[in-house]
Amino acid sequence: MSGRMTTIPTIRAMRIEDYPLVYELWSRCTGFSMKDADDSEHAIRVFLERNPDTCFVAEGDGGNIIGAILAGHDGRRSRIYHTAVHPEARGMGVGSLLAGHVVEALRALGLPKVAVGVYADNKAGNDFWEQQGFAIRDDLVYRELSL
Image (cartoon, rainbow, N blue to C red):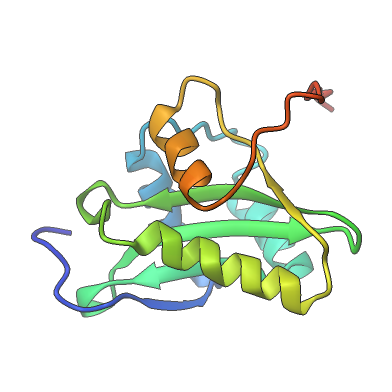
């Protein structure tokens, strides 16, 4: 991608065929941590099959993928996992468009709220989600167990 966008990006459902370009996008973004097992093509294929209506890409001029967002749910709770916007497309509303699509998709499914995890030292990411209306929860400790 070179130069600034001249049109409003198109937001569409993410497909597994988008994986190589989305993975490349993730690789370009700072503050983004990818794990081989979690972010392999197979893992993303399974995720998209489980969550076909809550994962989106943004296409800019020429159909280039300039943003992507993965979100999913278990029928009760929902979560945004990966959000990325090409560095040259930042500050143009792409992330807000993607976040808005996810929120509306989850709302349409009847889910009452959505969570997002952001690394504490990712200032740009934390500022973005605060601007989107996401509140900080300081009453929880996030834990995980690698399997």
